[in-house]
Length: 166
Length: 360
Image (cartoon, rainbow over all chains, first blue to last red; front, side, top):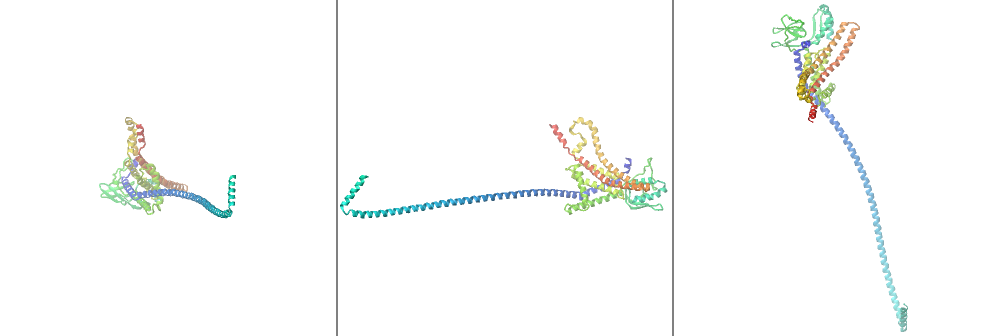
């Protein structure tokens, strides 16, 4: 201990403290502060970059998922559209068929009606003509028949006889 | 290098002076471990017995009823008495004593000089070394700092070597010991002290062999800074722990007796912590230098085909270990400083828990 105390030099202690203090101050100001700040900044930068990369990856996944979803949706929509189109086609065709059928039926009915009415008219015409002819014939026959009185009486008698029979 | 020439020449000198080689080597080692007032690289003895020193003198600054500044060349390496303003000074075992005109030194019974010692603020070899190391660190780390701004946050050159060390000190010394919240304000001190001690330790191992960190004044200065920083930045909880170590776990009348013993122990611990720091660094570096130089000295004592290569190999192995020790001691000093700062910044959460328990 005594040897240690003997070795202790106040001058050296003084210079050491002074120089070390100065060195500490200068390094603090011009070296450690910028170095530690730079290292911190760099580490923060790396952390941020990693986080950003992670985010980008997630976003990428989201985008892929989204696009897949979109694709699925599009596919489903296409399916739906095709189905709808098919249905529409079917309805159109069936409607057209129906329409055509009803229209045809209608036309046929009209034709039938026309034919019927024509036929009726024709029949009526024929009846008329027949009636006229028969009236004319009957007139002529009757004129002929009635030209003599006996014959007229005979006819009336004949007719009355017919009524009796009825 | 310096030693070789010195020792081999000394061998001749010892024959004349009658001292044996072992004592010479011992004295040389003693001399080497101490600070010196001139920057000598090596010395040799001329054939006529005159010592030649290669190096340069350093300024001597004394406070002896006024400031006295002169060159150390006046001492002629302790061989002559320097006369300044009518006062005479003599260099004896690397210390400056005030003497009479003849340079007489009076001794007490234990062979210690009793002459007056003026306050010595000389720029010694160690001070020069501290200065050089300081400049080196400034240059190294400011250029590292600049390389960040120039290079977009990526270090270049030597910075690539030093950056991991800086990060290691931050992540493995400061953060775990001091805590995430408060470690930042201690970082400059920890970094400076680590590199300062490491560089000086390494310089001590170069052939110049300037033993700065093996000097008690240096380690004392470093330890007292740790001590002051620890206590000036201490939190309330830290001081509570010093003066009231048991906290609320005991009523006050129970504590009185215990505290008569406990508080002095806690307070003593305050001083012992930095004291262990200063002794550890000093003793390690001192011992390393002694072992290394003794092994080198052995080469000159053995002077045989077996002994000298063997002691050379040993010295080589010890040198390698010393390089490790140089780093290790810097690490330990920084680590323990961080640990003490950690004590100083402790914030007891368990005390709040106690309060909560008591209130139930």
